[in-house]
Amino acid sequence: MNSVKLIGNVGREINVKEFEGGKVTTFSLATNESYVNKNKEEVKNTAWHSIVAWGQLAQRCEALLEKGKTVSVEGKLNYRQYQNKENLTVKVVEIVAFKVEEVVKGQEAKA
Image: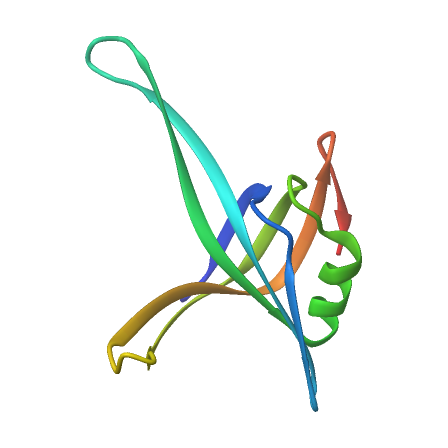
């Protein structure tokens, strides 16, 4: 099963593209974790994720999301590649979202 659930902060303003069949929205999500190392020091780590939402979910994300908001994202991992202008292969790992919810003080408001 290919399933991902992340809770983090929107890292930049969302990017919306319109096309004949609808919309696609992309944004980055920062997730944070911390642990205590062998020297008993707290180590914090931030991971960045690329999120893609299509159709009606893209429209709702466009209306709701902005940089800094805390959101919960559920979706699946997607791996793809393409040739760039220099004819080099670029590999992309992204999360295709099927559910995005704003996290508000322990409650979730659906997007």
